[in-house]
Every structure is written in structure tokens, then in C-alpha cells.
Amino acid sequence: MSGEPAAGPRGAIVERSSARLAAVQALFQIELTGRDPAEVIAEFDHHRLGAEVDGTRLATVERRWFADVVAGSWARCAELDPLIAATLAAGWTLERLGPLLRAIFRAAAYELVCHDEVPPRVIVSEYVDVAQAFHGAAELAFVNAALDKLGRRLRPLEMVGGSGGEPAAAG
Image (cartoon, rainbow, N blue to C red; front, side, top):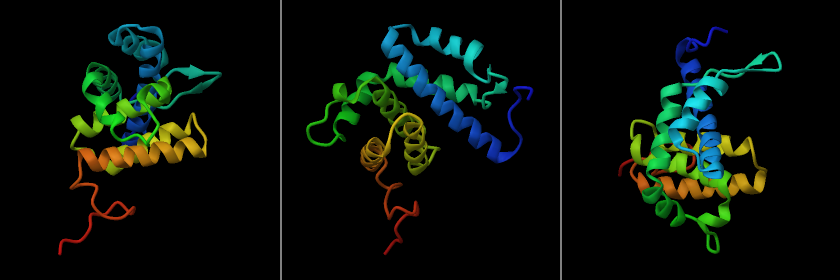
């Protein structure tokens, strides 16, 4: 694989999904280490994105999307964190989530707030998939419920309707 973007729309979807997973990992690293986001983005860009591990090349990543989600999520934590906290179940706080779930929620919230070209149901689904890489069924249900609530709060007109992703018919 040459590191070039995959051909066709399916390749672009995979590249963006890979960017989201890498963005969550980078946000986790930033929070744990206190390193500058630009340094972490550069490190991922030069040493991790599309790297080869044990003879297998990792998935190609949409690098611009990765950098945007990491930098934007981190820069807007003060705005995003209260939005996230307002969607959590009773008894839950942002601090109780832990750094990995905070990274997932911040990245998803950033996309919901700043990328209205991406349907909110896609964002919710993608970040539930990211959570699945690290957590079990109980956490996935929690993440799905909280992100769905966040999507409905931030983009209510696009989240109308059932779980099938289609808007409710206008009456």
C-alpha cells in the first residue's frame, strides 16, 4: 500500500473512520501527558498514521480530518464539556467518565457542533464504533444513549424519527 487515499467512496469512509479512531487516541494521549496538541498531531502524522505494525500496514487515515478533530476538540473543551455533561445519566460526571470516554465524547461533540455537513446519526454511529474498540456492551449502551441524546440536543431537526436514521414524515 502506498499511503495514497483509497479509491472510491468506501475508501474515503474507511479513511475517515480511521481518522476518528486515531483522533480519540491522540486526545487520550494529550489529556494524560499534558502535551501540546500540535506536537501530538505531528507525532501521529509522522510515526503512527498509516504505519506498519508487525508486517501489517495500518488503515489509511484522512489526515486533515484527524488533525481537525484533535485540534478542534481540544481547543473547544471549555465549550464542549458542559454540553457533554448535560447529556450524561444521573450520577455521572465528566470526571467519572475517565480520559478515554472523555476523548470519545469530545470528538463526537466537536463534530456535531462544527461539522454540520456530516449527518449526526453518522457521527453517533462512528463514535459508538470507536468505543467498541475499547469497551464492552455496557459501556457501548451508555455511549450510544449519551451520544444520541447529545445529537438530539445539538441537531434536533436532523435527529427526528426512529432509530432507522430516516427523518419522520412531515404531517
